[in-house]
Length: 377
Image (tube, rainbow, N blue to C red; front, side, top):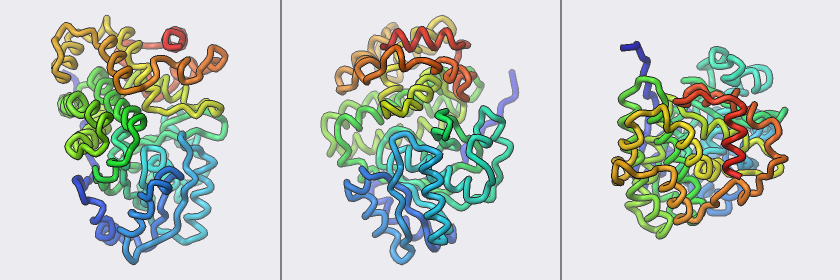
């Protein structure tokens, strides 16, 4: 048997009402003046104001210019506020985009040069040092799991969407309060929920040896199977919201093991500035085709995934997931999301070079990615 390294390093405060712990958490990490990083939607929903109130006397400035796919330009703008206001830590509230952007700002606050030099595909993992300001992450969606992840996915100035990966990018604390997700609209609940679903599936299929990650991924998938459709149908279902936030957290804890072709393609497609495609929705649309691509090499893993979902072992998972996407109101194709053949230029090559591609169970090259993208149009 091969030797493997297994790491789970995030501290988490989880449960209804956990946001009330924010003031004490800031004190715990010595943060006197945090920069609150968020987006316009979280502000409009009143959640940023709730976070500011929970800071007590440790209030600080707000940066709400985070885009659907966070950019290097937005990170620079947030960094300017951070430095101008003499902040000493970051609080990110929202989905994966504000949390990823806060990680990037923390990196830029103490590291020189453009973010591209710290991308995993450029050998940047070894260049990231621990001397970064603390980040406190507060998810308001149940999807990305960025609050417990060691990566930040950023669109660079040159248009590439890359992963910054380091154990030093873990938030110092994740405050997971399912109450913050109660007002999430059905479509966003579905899209972010399928992001968590895809994380659990892809990490379980990744070939690395990591039984704890496999167990966590299967548990997270089982929670998705029970709670996702309920949360979409009734956003006030507290039990379903709790289960989905736990599933999202588990998916990201597990994907330290690796992801695969779904994320390689969704990262590439997410770099399209003209379309502003949602990451979780992309994962949902791409997942069935990737399952078909990987079927010949995964052995008995598909029946185990089916079992976790409470389905018969012989279930056609790709077809079942297509049906799930329909039931929860997600688009059936990339074409329905506005993607056309002309948009694909250069994206298969980008997917092949993505940091998630090497851990797909079946090797995929640009020609494979082009065929899969076309099949999803």
